[in-house]
Length: 260
Image (cartoon, rainbow, N blue to C red; front, side, top):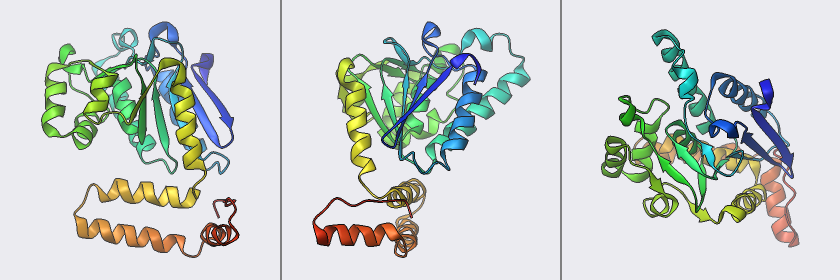
C-alpha cells in the first residue's frame, strides 16, 4: 500500500478500514483502490476477522468519489479501465463473505455513496451528506449506483436522486432507507462497533450463509430464493458451531463460535 492511503486496524474480530486521503476528502485514486482490492482479497480468508467497518479519515468526508484531478490525466481507454476496476471491486465488497458496515462520517458523493451502497449496513453521521451526483458532470454512476440504489430505496426515488444529482442529508437518507441508522459525529464509530459486536456474537458461518442467501435471493423469484435458503441451512447442519450453539443454550452460557 503506497503512502498509507489505506489504514487498517483489527480489534476483537472487527477490522476497521480507513480511507486515508483527508486532504482530498478521501477521493478514490487508483493506488487507494488497488490497496483496497488487495486487502479485500486477503481478509476473505482471515478467520480472525468477523466484521469489517469502512470509514474515512478526518471529520469532513467519508469519500468524495473519484479523484477528478487524477481522472483529468486519464485517456478515454484508462477511464474505461478505471470504471471496470472500481465496479468489480465494489461488487467484490458486496459479495465478501463477511458483513461490511459503512461508517459514513461526512461527505459521501458519487463513488463514496456507491461504496456505502456496496456495504451491507450503512450508519451515517448526522453531519453526512450523500448523493449520486454524476449526471451533473454529464456522466452516470459507474460503480453500481444505478443498480443498487433503486433496489434499496425504490425505482422512483432512485431516479429522482440520480436525475437531479441531488445531495441529501443524513435525516433524509434515513427516511428513505438509504442508511440504517444516524449517529452524532462523536458517537458514529462507537455505534458502528456496537453493531459489529452484536454481529460478532452470532455464528460466523451462519452470517456468511445468511448474507449469501439474502444477496442472491433478492435477485430471483421467491421459490428460487426459498431453495437458496434451504441449501444455506443444510450447509450449516454439520458444523461444530451449530452444535456449540445448542450446547451453549442448554448450559445457559454464551456460545464460543470458531467458524467451524
